[in-house]
Amino acid sequence: GEDVEQSLFLSVREGDSSVINCTYTDSSSTYLYWYKQEPGAGLQLLTYIFSNMDMKQDQRLTVLLNKKDKHLSLRIADTQTGDSAIYFCAETRAGTGRRALTFGSGTRLQVQP
Amino acid sequence: DVKVTQSSRYLVKRTGEKVFLECVQDMDHENMFWYRQDPGLGLRLIYFSYDVKMKEKGDIPEGYSVSREKKERFSLILESASTNQTSMYLCASSLLDFSGNTIYFGEGSWLTVV
Image 1 (spheres, each protein chain N blue to C red):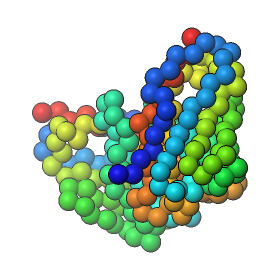
Image 2 (tube, one colour; image 1 turned 180 degrees about the vertical axis):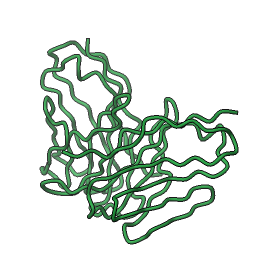
Image 3 (cartoon, rainbow over the protein chains, first blue to last red; image 1 turned 45 degrees about the vertical axis):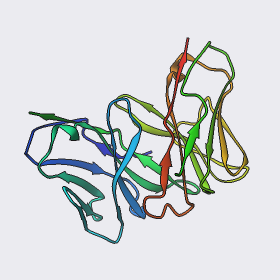
């Protein structure tokens, strides 16, 4: 079936903004999520957006949702070295039966000092 | 403090062995999930369950089965382990409607099949 798509790698300089993009598959997904995974650590929920919203802001994080294009983005303002991690987007996709949480392949963000 | 607990953090098994990975949650969640995580492939859904004795295939169910005899426990079974099943396995649980941030992950189980 279709995949949740993300670019694999993004490199930015400390202090710049980072924008991580995701294309999801199910237009009926009720929630869309961004998770962060630091090396050797588990998954940390960063933020989520309900499908009836276009934008959500939470401190340095801004999520934009374009339902027409099924496009989700995560903007990190004033990116710090501690933001270096893999970022996953996820959707609540309905398959042949119940909904399940389906992830993209992850974007590795590298922040250069 | 809410918890999803995976019983084994690191396992090494031989090809052909039967492997059980156990996951327990204490939040009375209806949904439970098993994923595997491989570099460059993200988290891929193996199986999930939305109620006791109910299960649905995810994107990569081949070579796996699951069991949910009690609401709090969801087991992943590798009937005959193979080297291509070497991976990190993650369990998660959530409320039935996924409302908001009510999705919790375990720490992961690293399985090596030799």
